[in-house]
Image (cartoon, rainbow, N blue to C red; front, side, top):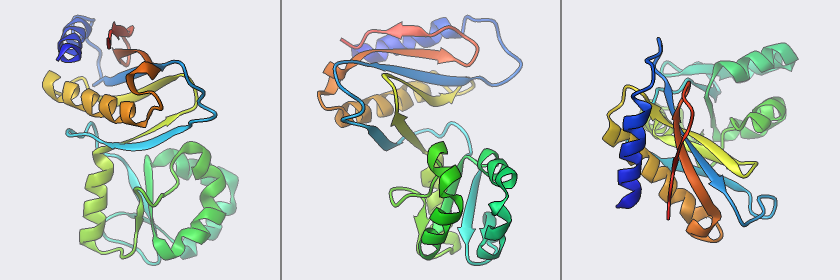
Length: 209
């Protein structure tokens, strides 16, 4: 597969850059064309074969939960303070909720979590029971899922870390790319090109046709 070879070459080039003192993120940039995002907004979850990092997850539950940082119903009123609410949104990558608390979560936290793309959703993030098995399964799913929301014609998606094997990064890139193609109105026609970069490097263009 041609794109596979192109990705291999891009990673070889990226690894020639001067090493940094931290583990850089590998970003995939997808440049779109020939359709209107306003008419066809993109908002999907993609499962990737290799998790890039453990996400910081908090849960909205009826009572304290031993398996996860918990915000109980009793804590909700504390977050009417805008500063505390902002701090909470910043601290965690992802939020999950018990289904029966969702209306109150939406009222209390929606205005901050919604725009940040961190609102628990039926696709990923709502549990009926806050038991160990349900929570661990959901955590695993969240850690191997990426949310793709496109607001402009160029989408940047973190697909891995520099210390991962090239094959793992490539498998993650292809998983995202293939799912994205399915979500686009005209498949590959809507993709101008893709680019790969590390946090501190310039992007490398990859031809897709």
